[in-house]
Length: 397
Ligand SMILES: [Zn+2]
Image (cartoon, rainbow, N blue to C red; front, top):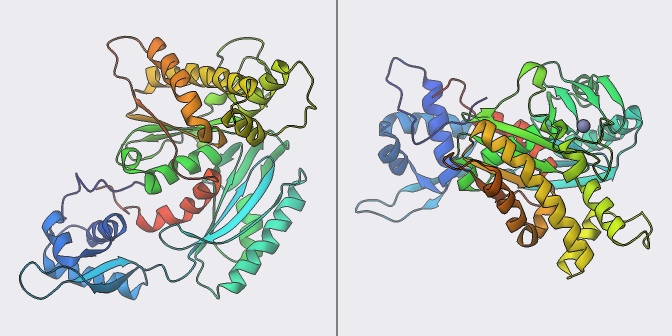
């Protein structure tokens, strides 16, 4: 599934496949709405008649609609096109170590309905609960939802729809897609959380990110995961297992054990759990250990010194790992997402200084950006597993 590069896409000749032209038109509407047929024609070099025929098809499929009239450049005022967002089209399920969120969205990715519950470490209980909420959403929307995207915090093989290993709950070889699909009666796509969020950044992120063909998404949560976008698509490796950089060795005696059990992994130094452990240590055990990461961020933003130190130290280690990724991949950008992004103003310099220091002189560096996907990146990721398919080119362009 590859995102079309509008800058490079050439209008297909009459003897090539009509699908490519269809995706070009659809993506112009998606990225530039409201837009007229004439504007698409000027920028894409597609014939007006070709565009009109494609627009009729897209309207009939319920993907595009006409809205009012634009500015005239002489003659009649042109009719403008936008994505049709009248109804819920996708369902996303984000299963995280703490909570599970289920939501529906329209074609543009805007959330319509949402429900959360605590994730049960018993897989059957969690998936049953997902099924109940998902069936409610399907009934409520009277058949408009086309598919379900599910992301999970661990090793996932999307090609067979199985969660291979979810370390937090010790779930192994779980046929998630089959269980949900047979209960809900819709196609189900599953993927790892960081890959899903990288896909969401590619399709729905800010322009500096989604015009990059090569970038790395770093998801900081209970663990640390990475999603690699290589030439406009998620790089998966064998059985979808690429991007497990959370387990690269960056030191020794980390503040917390890694989810894999070792104490030298990147995740054990730079996850939310690592930041909490640093904060508790700085407070000399005077706090109960029940504090959650959003609270540490709130305290840091409120000016509490120990909370700031804990976050800055965590950011330094994040920077160490990111430096290694930049040296190895030379991406255009590295995007950091998760709750820690709320404290970007406090951590940015620690992060970028570490990276500047360790990326060798003469090598190109990459822009380090905070994710703009909002509070629930994993949910955006889950939804984009369904939505990106609607816009992806069937053939590389
Ligand atoms: Zn590990």
